[in-house]
Length: 396
Ligand SMILES: Cc1cc2nc3c(=O)[nH]c(=O)nc-3n(C[C@H](O)[C@H](O)[C@H](O)COP(=O)(O)OP(=O)(O)OC[C@H]3O[C@@H](n4cnc5c(N)ncnc54)[C@H](O)[C@@H]3O)c2cc1C
Image (cartoon, rainbow, N blue to C red; front, side, top):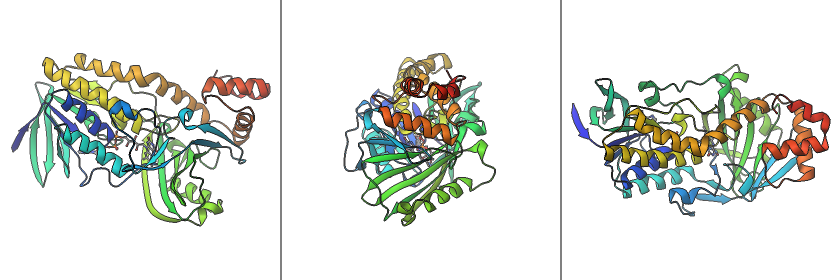
């Protein structure tokens, strides 16, 4: 079998993979990133909404090459149509820019390549190589041929369906209530307010929400995430989305120019994301925000940490699970509390009736909100509708 040798191998060419590969290379490691698809970034499986505030942390300047539309904020819309507006700076991790995700992912991969990362597309990881119980590389398939790649550190950035975690013995299994099944159209020829990302809540989306993210005049990504435990058949997410679109004439007149399906984890943070010689990052590590379903930001920030720690591990000649705890500490310090809190919020949200959504969003629309967080929301509810706060007693 043909053999190759690198310090670090990154499996997956999404944001988690490209950012971790780049930071590992910039910190002195020799890096190979492999991507099973023939083209990085394509096909797009994303609502394409991201916040603005974190991009400079991964050295990315806003550019027309990948920004399709800039929004002022988000509108959270109750079943009865009442809505509250939230400024983009306070509206979570999906409102700021609506991007062209294929271009965005390619730019991140190009930045990695410019930093010295070797990139191979149409190349997929088939398994890990273990010597004396320790991971020492991967076997990958390229052009029909198996290739053995020796490496000191493997970064599993292979997305929702990650196999690297499973191969490495890291428990990434998800309960159906912690998965959203998603479907999305990009609709052309609709009436859409390009200043806002819209989020529709209520029983027409069991355990999730419907999003309308405008990409420009008359065009938007219109998608749905439905909690897997609340559906009983394949195709249910599309069915709910179609019913919603039918009942909204401003959308129903649109023509689909793209359709995607996929899944996101909406789980609490998993127990560990590292083992000897292996780190998981992004969707592979279940880092998606359980309320918004957004994962590009988390994948990129954690990718930066993973790349830095991988390079350090190579320099120190120590890629043991103990050493890689540095990565666990960095990403958890930054993201874990928020992910856990939002998982609790998601657990509560999935139990609320349309009436409760209408009343809470009605209150928020009335009082306005400096910053949209759980504390502020409950304070407003307590002041305006003391009866309603009983609904949240278990949560409090
Ligand atoms: C319908 C939908 C809408 C979404 N909307 C948003 C949104 O609006 N905003 C947001 O922030 N997030 C959104 N997300 C989530 C977001 O897309 C992910 O969180 C993000 O892509 C995570 O990046 P990643 O690099 O971890 O994984 P991915 O982007 O999934 O990249 C993983 C890569 O690994 C490759 N791969 C897998 N296995 C192998 C293998 N064995 N060998 C080689 N390569 C492999 C895959 O081909 C893929 O390219 C959405 C997700 C879905 C499904």
